[in-house]
Length: 393
Image (cartoon, rainbow, N blue to C red; front, side, top):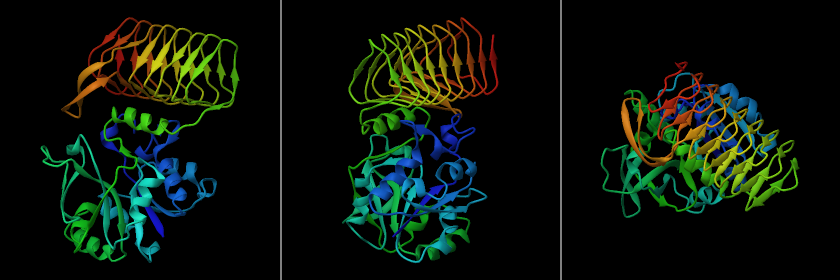
């Protein structure tokens, strides 16, 4: 059986973290999100993979190549204009000659998630799960195990059952797709609703998706839940390690530092002395966390510098961010403004996009989004979103 991974989209709702990366390549627990999809497919015995790529596809091709390093055989097709998921899948038609799986490239899934579909074969089936926030997804109505309706992102929902976007399909789905596209309908949901019988398979196996920037924290935490202890680099005397901690090659954990897992420290990092890394934290490669700084439940990408006596909690920090001493992120309930809409988040720090420079003694309030390539002068209190390329003086 082959699998088609849909990886062409930008992920506009995840901006500003998709400015230079396609959504599927955002790292969680120091691996691109899509790598978890490929690992799970291979663990399930599916190694023939077709990737539909588009937005910043070079990043994907460079990382995954032929798939050999991941135990897979990967072919690529390009969706030059991102019209929709059915339109994306149509690009893979020439490479499909039997029943196949379709998966989004921006979910973290487990082997068990894939085998739920494989163990209950059907000409057409969709994997469904329960969600506390169903309005972010396609809400599913079932009758006798068959899907009656999938309502995309309803304002209010009477059901907590949602579509994962993971399907088992027959090649004749392309007939439905062609007919719908002739009427300018390009989404895969409409195509699968168009078939005679779509079986809904409920799973409680690992499945998590990042829709908005703050969702990256829960995706990161889920990915970290499966790490195993692995200590490389240099760990000086007086370091305390607790729980599952992964430390990459070439990293230095300096004396007096405390790291509690699950946590991942990438290659070439310098932590401490006397720094504190608390659970559910990922720190990418070539990062420097200065003395007496505390990082908790946060996702730090790569080549980041955090000055001494800083506190970063429940936050997402993009690559290349440089912060001076005494950076403080407030963590609490917030209403986050994103694309003229407000989203209630119960517990959040801040989100800082790539290549932003922050002076000493800066305080960032809960829920603030600082876009890429900003400069924030020392001593400022940031209470609202900062657009791309701004300077706060």
